[in-house]
Picture: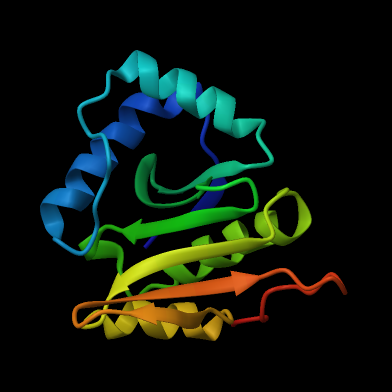
Length: 164
């Protein structure tokens, strides 16, 4: 595999991001996107707004001129944001998810106005749950099929766990 680069998405990435989101949702039922039917123009405008926000981020992983994964944190309340992450099936188990998570949490701890980040994951998705636990997410709620996990900033300015 070629070198993977990570960066914040911008308006010029709208077509590629939309294509990746469609591929990711087709590959697995474990990844959901709220609005896959939005126009490229609307997504471009959203990406441009997000790029300069302290309440949202979208980071893409690119390899050989192709997006292979992404992670987002989007505010759901004034102090809390939801994290979503996905990597193409063919590119999983290569460390891309770990790199995306580290980059997103670095943004959360150093640049965001949010005080906590949460995510919901299927109980059966042990690989994802292990990744989240490595970074310090803790289970706060559970149902028979899913768990909600959360990580919070501490007033002492904590950082995410260093993961290799």
